[in-house]
Structures are given as C-alpha cells and as structure tokens.
Amino acid sequence: ALRGSFALKARKANRGSRYGLQLVASYKVAILGAAGGIGQPLALLIKMSPLVSALNLYDIANVKGVAADLSHCNTPSQVLDFTGASELGDCLKGANVVVIPAGVPRKPGMTRDDLFNINANIVMTLVEAVADNCPDAFIHIISNPVNSTVPIAAEVLKQKGVYNPKKLFGVTTLDVVRANTFVAQKKNLKLIDVDVPVIGGHAGITILPLLSKTKPTVSFTDEEVEQLTVRIQNAGTEVVEAKAGAGSATLSMAYAAARFVESSLRALDGDGDVYECSFVQSDLTNLPFFASRIKLGRNGVEALIPSDLIGLSEYEDKTLEALKPELKASIKKGIAFVQKQP
Ligand code: NAD
Ligand code: LMR
Image (cartoon, rainbow, N blue to C red; front, side, top):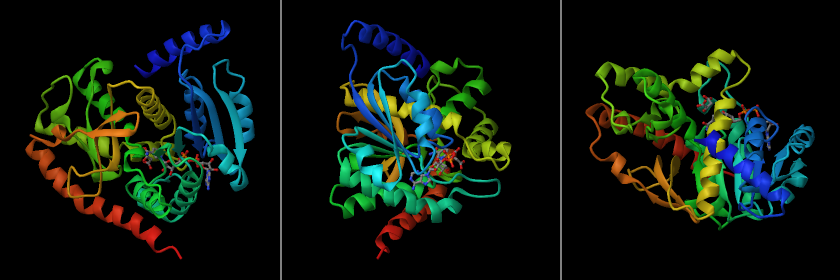
C-alpha cells in the first residue's frame, strides 16, 4: 500500500508541477540523524512523498553529500542540509514532522538498553532544540531504547513548558510491519490484507503482537502463537546478528518510519481514517506510556483504541502482565535521567 500510494501520488505531483498546478499538500519534514543507516533510506522514501514540500536533513557530519544526491530526484520537495549544533535551529524552524533516528545502533550481544548512556543524551539535546524551534511539530522518536527515549523526550518538553502528549510518538511501526510479514508467510495470506496490532513497548518481551486480533481473522495453534510471538519480539536481534557488528535494521526501519510519516502527513492533511500503532502517553494500562493502536488526526493522537485490549487470549493476558515490570522500569529510567540533570 505504501509503495502504491507513493508511486501514484508522485506521478500526479510530477504532472501537477509541470503544469503549475497544486494537486497535493505541502509539509516540512526534518530528519535528525539523516546521514545514518536509517536516515539515508528514510530521506529517500520521504523525498518520494508528494505531501512533502521541504525536506530538511540534519546530522553532525556527512549530510551535505546526502542532500546533494537526493536533491537531484525530480520529486517536488526541496532538500536542504544542516550540519552541527549551530545549524540545528534553522533545520527545525517551521517543521510539521520531526523524525529522530540519531544515535548509536546495537552490536551482537547488546540489549537496546545498553544504548541508553549514549542515546539518552543525544535525544535530550535534540528534543530541547525541537522545543525551542518547532514545539507544535509531530515528533517521531526512533532512537533506542524507545521505551526510555520517549519518556526522556516528554520530560524535556515538560521542562520547556511545551509538552503536548498528542504529538509525541515512539515509532513502533517496524514491529507491526514484521508481524504482518511473518503472519502472512506462516498462514499463506496475501500480505496486503494482513494487519496485526502490536502493543506494549519496543524491546524484547515488551513487544506484544496481538495475534488474536489479526485481520483477517486467522486461527493459530498454541505452538504457532508462541513461535510467532517470539520471532516478532526477537526480530531486531535477528537482524543485528545477521549484520554481525555492522549495525541493526536500517532498510526495513526506513520503510516503517516512512509509513508512519506518510500516515502522520495524511492525518495532518485532514484524512479522517488514519490508524497506526505507536508508543505514546496512555491511560490504557497503569503505565504512563504504552504502545497501542491510535487514531491520528490533525492534532496528533485523536484517540487510543482500547478495544484491542479487550478479550485478549489467555497467552496474551499473561504476556501483557509479564512485560509491565520491565516497561515500567525503562520508562522510570528515562524520566529520572532528565530529572537528574543539573
Ligand atoms: P547509524 O549509526 O547508522 O546512524 C545514526 C546517525 O545519527 C549517524 O549518522 C550519526 O552521525 C547521527 N548522530 C549521532 N549523534 C547525533 C547527534 N547528536 N545529532 C544528530 N545526529 C547524530 O545508526 P542507525 O542504524 O541509523 O540507527 C539509529 C538509531 O535507531 C539507533 O539507536 C537504533 O537502535 C535505532 N533503531 C530503532 C528502531 C525502531 O524500531 N524504533 C529500528 C532500528 C533502529
Ligand atoms: C529493531 O527492532 O530492529 C531496532 O529496535 C533495532 C535493534 O536494536 O534491534
């Protein structure tokens, strides 16, 4: 669906611009960490979106060449590059959506939490700049550990007096993309039809695919549920091990992040039928942040979808209870990190 909608809209936009027509809307997207493994293919996918008129690429190094390269694609958006802290403010001014994949990725043997010490600081500094320059933007946090970096971002925004919980998102789209792919493969379903909500958080056992809520309705044996759940929870590690020290998922992540950006832009543009899973401030459980399906609208999270949590299977109920202590601790760690700053 993503590929189809990009291609169709890009064709229309191209025709439109040739005749000087404005056929599609115009939004500014900023990517922070744009020269990285995720940043580069994500920038390419966003460059293909006809909903985007300005694509601002920021990194601490190597972003000039990425922007020069991308700027030759004959799609509507103007690509600009920004390097280093002195140019960060200009990158962010006027942005509607800010995507943050800045930070270090895992190597084999590491957990996402092992990235905390480096990435917590990076996310804190970048979100401070977002608060100062585009406090009204949708903020998409990709940098790991997402279970802590989203609470970090929330705390920074609160301290700056601009926190809007409806506009801060932990990007968990890759978990849904993986769940859809693995279920379709296992059950011989057409990929385009499959939709599995994934709730909880974005690390190991905190990732809980709700296979009982798969659309279209599918039945799984207990063994299949166990095997699929564990594969989805460990899919990030599967890639980290296959890359053997060269990083973690970048291409599938860029694909997933581009889908989440496109959904956000459609929502901003008034589409009333946009649903995604995301790790957001939530009252669906006793945890302050929780990933679930959400309805997106012009102002961000329009509604959480509580029905997914009703009528869970016994396995899902048990797994949900089991993930709460770890997720709670990761959230607490993120909040404490910001509160401890001098
Ligand atoms: P990478 O090392 O290839 O790229 C990271 C980029 O961030 C680099 O270009 C680097 O220069 C830049 N950077 C570092 N510090 C910065 C700063 N202060 N300001 C701006 N940019 C800065 O890593 P990657 O593979 O692109 O992964 C990035 C992050 O995304 C990692 O933390 C990884 O764990 C996470 N990730 C999350 C998901 C998810 O599902 N949410 C999936 C995959 C990866
Ligand atoms: C993923 O799920 O692929 C990312 O969170 C990266 C990782 O470290 O596994």
